[in-house]
Image (cartoon, rainbow, N blue to C red; front, side, top):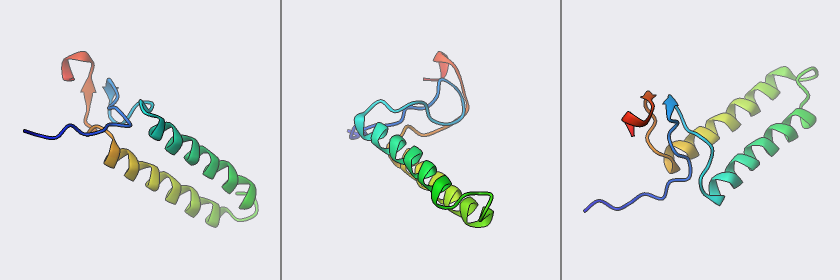
Length: 84
């Protein structure tokens, strides 16, 4: 019997990707991501150091996607309720 996964990020109903978090751990990850982007925008303003700003933002987005892939439903193109 397959073990039930603890899902933090459910798949979107329409389209590809993940929807809003359904567990407090997912919300913590999302709030941390937003805080990291805000901190980055003040610490490395894009007008002063656009390359470093872009690198940190890309790394933050990649980290969020890794967590979503690890703790979320498998993404795939969905067309609504019939795909669940």
